[in-house]
Amino acid sequence: MEFATGALGTLLPKLGQLLQDEYNLQKGVKKDIQFVRKELESMHAALRDVGEVPQEQLKEVIRIWARDVRELSYDMEDIVDTFLVRVQGSEPPSKRSVKRFVKKMTSIVSNAKTRHDIGQEIKDIKERVKDVAERRDRYKVDAITPTKTSVDPRITALYTKAASLVGIDKPREELISMLTKEDGGESSVEERIVSIVGFGGLGKTTLARAVYDKIKQQYNCTAFVSVSRDPDIIKILKDLLYELDRNEYMGIHNTALGQHHLTDLVQEFLKNKRYLIVIDDIWDTKPWEMIRCALPENGKKSGVLTTTRITDVAEHVGGCYRMKLLTQESSKILFYGRIFGSIDKCPPQFSDVSENLLKKCGGVPLAIVTTSSLLANKSRNVNEWQDVCDSIGSGLRNNPVASLPTESGCSPGRTQVTPASPSGGRWLPILGVRSSNNK
Image 1: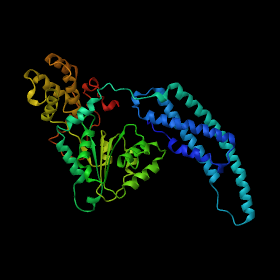
Image 2: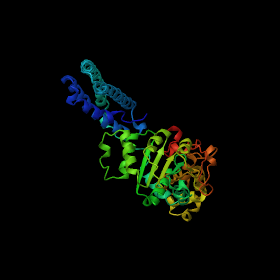
Image 3: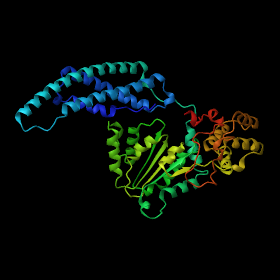
């Protein structure tokens, strides 16, 4: 379920417009609109908070409440839009005074009925607003905050630091070449779009960040934004603007601007600039297309880098770059380095069990980092290490993605890669890493 804010971003300014004197609404109707507007402002803020919480951490009643608020906002916007069209819409004035008089009288009668109709519809909406407001208090929606994950939050930082030292140089340079290479002709001035694809745990985001950090100085402006599985396109566009110029768009997240307006702002900001944009963690082509509309082709040799675990998405985006597993040598460097400091400091009695653990990790960086972090907190007892090894399954054994190339044997290109994590990887749930099939 997508916890976007529905039509609230565009609806609230319209409600303010209705309160203007020119619409000549009855006093009671204005009071109802003021009540509805105030409640919807609070719900808008609550929906944004709900959208920040991972879906799996939300109770079903909260998901239903969020859905109902969004549906309410769409219904309300339809009513307001219909009213504004009927009241504001008119044909060019006739030159004949009699016809002009008849049209004016007809319009007065029609508008009076329209105002009466919206008065009744606002009352109906008010009752619905009261209901969802009471449920918000009952379910304590405003008190929702993300719960702490069961995985040590330091894992991400540890992984980023370690992975930047092991096996990342070659793929980083390959991607930089794809984003910046000159091939002559008109295409050399067009923007480059590259999509990194691979299943969860291969380090797509870390690689994208490494590329971004190394070449961002070559561009006039840069941004690194995340999409995720349940995207809020309004928030993504606001994040993009904020990343592009934090001074100019410091308060952008507090505005009620709609998607069309935000898209125009991004286009206007980028139209004469060479930009580098990273769009991380795309799950579907639809949000990509919405973001793509905001990125102008301005002939400035701009670069766009995306990450996804879904092959179809990567191929739709274009410039598909297939992630690679770590080689056995790089796996050892990462594993032993995190536990013993270096590959040559592993005590001989741990050699065999370490080799077996590395086989089960299958060259997946996140599996290696998580396993080594677990073992680093245990005593240097071979039997304990063997217990850990026996308790987890093989990451890539007997699995279609076992044919994934290692870092030393693959060139970037359009490839077919299963988007799911290894189905045989029983180590995933044990170490707190879920298969992407279950996400």
